[in-house]
Image (cartoon, rainbow over all chains, first blue to last red; front, side, top):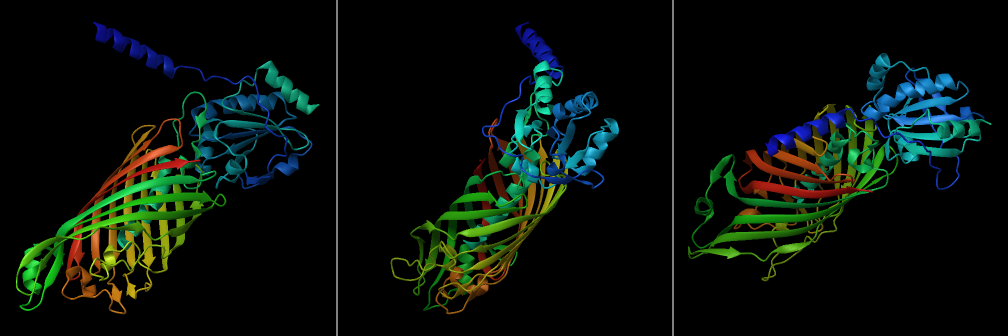
Length: 168
Length: 339
């Protein structure tokens, strides 16, 4: 009976784990030092080059992700909603992944914002990425303003306020 | 000595290249920690360190492909009025410290410094026909430092790639001692020395194709040797490996490798190491073909950038020039840490 009870508990625990919602981040962190965002120039899926320099004067959401990261996959449609809600924002998805995997993902989850391919991981190194997803907010002057490692609650008012503050 | 140096370089290349199967693809429900250096050769952000212990046992003697007993080898070579000696058992141990430093996203430099300890038991038949077993003093010390640079010629993704081609070029320096003498003042066998005394070229090519959770790899390695300080030149070596690794969980990879080696004959230019009354001191009895079957296991230490690798090798094919003592088994244990 005790074994059945423990097994039952384990089954419920595992089912609960499977349906568990990701812990959402409701606050950005500030970088230890204020510095310009490291330069990058990366192609999108059509080989069109994108550089951070071309977005000086605009607020950029730099989202580093990969298709094999389940929380990243879940966050992408929410980022699409964010882009629709704030058309003045520049949302860039940086895929630390193969072109083929990203193309396959986009067939199921179409996105209007650019997805750039960091094929050899230059941005990964330059930005010292330790986890996925990682999101940077880059201000109009091209400085790294905020960052977060993990899935962000983009509907949280604190987060929205920070974006609006950067936009002013 | 040179053989095991080369095997270490190969296993490091293979190890670094195959770590990508750990790339934490099935990340947790919070955020996915990239686990930088354990995710593959293109991902080490700062540097990685590895400590590898290797133990190699040799007791079988072969003539061509055939096994032959030590006494039979002696009987075939010994002549009245002369002596003959053969190794009966050899154990080679090596502790190698390996450092890996990325230069940029496509170049990485490796440094390998081994500490070697070689033991040999011998059987000796003197000019009177008496047979004696002897134990040689262990030869130990720092071996030859190798430096290798790896270039990612192609990868389809920086982490968890499905296809990658890596080229390597390097040099083996003569930091190990190659003029160790025994208590009688005679030079110890060339293969027992901790160094070769030569500056050698190292070339590698690694191709990886992944069908996650299965990762397949092919390696080619060429060791271009030169004449050592004491005039002894080990034969060039060509290594070829095929490996399959299966990611059985977030923290365990199991694999199977086939490791092949073709060694060319050695040359003793100044004749300092040649003694035709001793099997291991006969340059004609060098050069071989070996193929090993090697099960491997890799364990990632949870929530760290560390991993532990184990590899066991058994020969499935050996063909030698003349008479040579061959490897019966070899195992390696390494601990790798990314920073």
